[in-house]
Image (cartoon, rainbow, N blue to C red; front, side):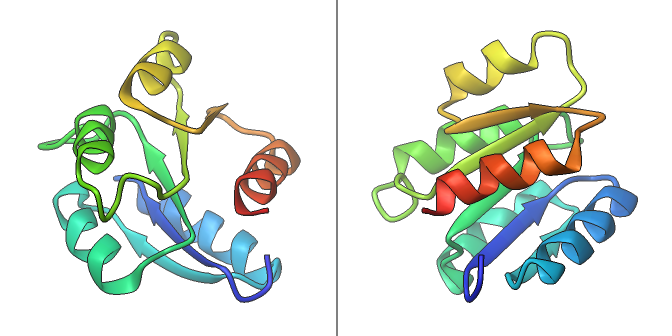
Length: 120
C-alpha cells in the first residue's frame, strides 16, 4: 500500500480516524471526509487510488454517491470498497457499482486484504 492514496468517507469520525491510522501504518497517504457531499471535490482534486465508502450517511447516501461516481468518466474507474452494517448492504453495494464490500463491524485483516487486492 506504499505510496497509494486512500480516501475514506464515513459519517462516523471514530471509524474514519481508526481507518486513517490503520492505512497510514500500511504506508498509504490517507484523506478522510465525514460529509459525503465533499467526496466529488476530493476525488477530482486528490485523485485517490481507492475510495472506502460507508453506505448509510445523512444527506447523500453512499449508494447514491457511488452511482454518481460510476456515471462520470473521470471517476468511473476508481476502485470503491463499501463498508456497511446493513443487512442488505452487499446487494445495495453491488447494485450501486462497488468493487468490493466488507460488513461492519469489520475484521481489520479482511478490510486490509480487500483494499490491497483492489490496489494491486
